[in-house]
Length: 148
Image: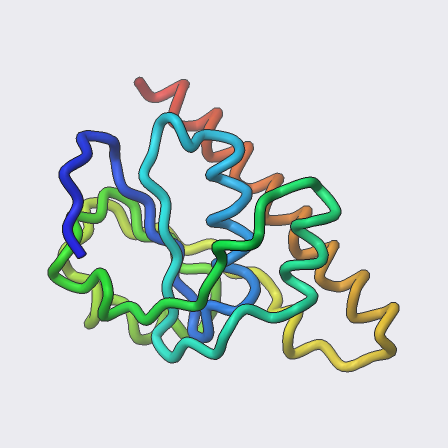
């Protein structure tokens, strides 16, 4: 996969590419999709978690094209401007895997897919993490504007 765009490329990385990185991709696409080319990937993709789709749909975000992608789709194939690691497990592996990025950012979020509880509690955990990611993205976009 190669890209010919001149927009900076943002790649959200997680181990499974099932929840946090998918949320970050969808949220940034709605906030700044005109400014960035946005992807997500996993070191060991597991498929998109159904509750991820549910909590994004609650915000009216498109989810029909979401799919879990391996990091090998991007490794050495796409010039990454910002690689954003959203989980601890991927953070331990990524410095070896992604040496080609200009900016490696580390934003760890709790894994909602690993949360154990009732279905209602699980849904709430996904919402909390979604909202934390949205808040962090908003902060980052402001930071980028102020450092121009």
